[in-house]
Image 1 (spheres, helix red, strand yellow):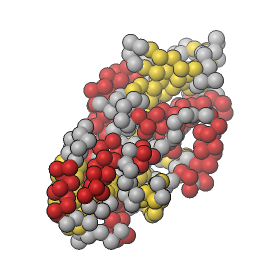
Image 2 (spheres, rainbow, N blue to C red; image 1 turned 90 degrees about the horizontal axis):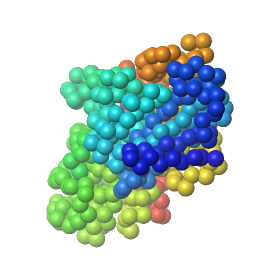
Image 3 (spheres, rainbow, N blue to C red; image 1 turned 60 degrees about the vertical axis):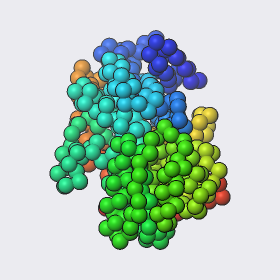
Length: 403
């Protein structure tokens, strides 16, 4: 049974994967029969983006439960510590310090937002604490601020991700819209956040390179819900589609108000690919989104994950990042397994540093397919999928690896 303990003074939610701690369990430095390893999860567990955040938390929890049930790492019991970042960088930075302060914690899964990740990367790297995000796509997180000029430098050694970058996602979206949807004139909008702005910029570069025309650009406040002024501009521009760099809480009303005025589709990235986008948008039909990987429902490698998730009885869906989250969590488990095996079945005193070293060598068949990381900490799996709202649900249209 899952035991939930709410610590009101910190906002922390600790998920103990197999009940209360065994009497003979010890901390990572205790040397008892069973050593405890905590894996952190940072995501928006409340607020507008909580649908995605709760899917991340649950999928990480399932990985931890599975590792404990199967005794994947003999002598080690895994526990999960989940913190709510509210999709705010300042809260994410506070959460990073809480994770660092837990001596049993050897890795962190998350966050959802690239902007939150930016606030966590340095403290985690300074602490040699491994971080693996299943959702961040901001290219600069792994390749530095000058990646566009070809000057790629990994800024933070402790940061990894199982999601591919906006450079890949934006290019894929532009190619799909131009070559498959046959749209040549696009109005470009972003929410001014690192994820949205980066995605829109990548889309623009590829779309114009293919011969497409950006007939207008604009920025919105992601907290706004009245977009009639920008819709008026879109209508007068003659655009055949809108590309929006942002997330579904603002993307859904933007799309609905757009279709109240002009019947053209709105396209976005993985921040739009959520069932909640459709719930919040009565006129979502025909809208398009891209997301990392292939739909887990279409992957033979994901059948067990889907069945186990259902059996576990989580009330929230695993959403867009469930498979990638399970793989991100499992990559930390695999790194811990390697470290323990190399140290006569025990955790070493410098376990965090050793786990971080082991991450670059992690390689296994995951829920989403082969899982490994390149020299920047990026996933080597660059598979992308385009979806369209058809009959009131997201339907996959095209999946391909992007080079």
